[in-house]
Image (tube, rainbow, N blue to C red):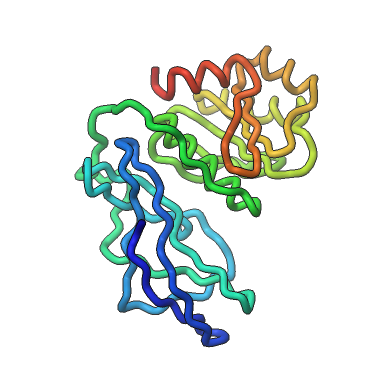
Length: 231
């Protein structure tokens, strides 16, 4: 467990004892962003991809990965961004090159309470599969949030309606223009004809449950889980 520190809400003055959540590195070691005890927390009014993620080095294997920026929700309704210590270099920094591939450990999910949690869960799952340089996709999809990484375009759909064939086709067409594979993650599942369309196009389909664990629902997705990225 990461070390805790007191965090005071600037709006109401409440003091909280906070410890950053740890996430498993590819080597299996829990990694948590180091907290900056000397800096004050900032009130968070909106989310942006660049500010929502920080780059942290694993103390065991030296791998650099992006992890969710620590946040704390105060009882007064204010959301605080907890400061992180150390200079954070981009994930693609040449001094942070990935070490040789290691066997995957069990995936550690993130509980989904809001749409942003679904995006976080999928980003972590893509990294667990072996994809690198995960970021917001350049092109927007009709619904949900797009994520991109080396070799894949992913769609995160946290809506309450099952994904339609059109949703699957839009993702596939966008991926085709970028000559990359595509993966769809839906919280509400898929219409039967959407699954048929995905099978015909070779689109991997996953369903997200509220524990944040993606479950494959077609053959392409099952194969991806078995082989991982880049194989």
